[in-house]
Length: 190
Image (cartoon, rainbow, N blue to C red; front, top):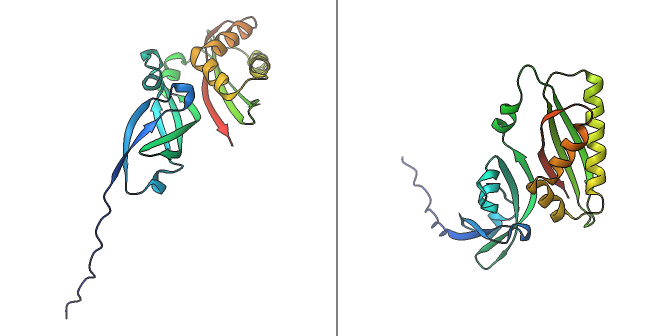
């Protein structure tokens, strides 16, 4: 005997929500997302190219992570939670005869958030471990001193504009000439 299947419930119609960038990026509509319910979108993490947020194509190699925090009618508000440099950008500067130096620093902002900054430096030639350690220590000191007393928005703007990268290369370049210095990744800890 064949069993009958239960009556299927009608599907809920999807609604389109406009995703709005954070205040530091001008609160522009980035794109639209469809969902059955607002609660399914809440706390979702979205990754967007920085060039889409700033309108500057030079930033195509950086992806920004945004978290959906709330809704205003059909607009989903977001907050900045981090960014990362694409692997192909890093791979272009690293090869067999160069040294890669990574640095990790945790900085507390004046608005009470902790941000983890991972930076990368590449030398023109291969160097000894002692030189790498000196460059890493110098970069960490400069990053901590530079970001002391700043808000999250100021830190993000300085990273995007390249001010931090110039400070790192200027200071660490005195120890050994650098070919490349960049903030590889940032993460906001709540």
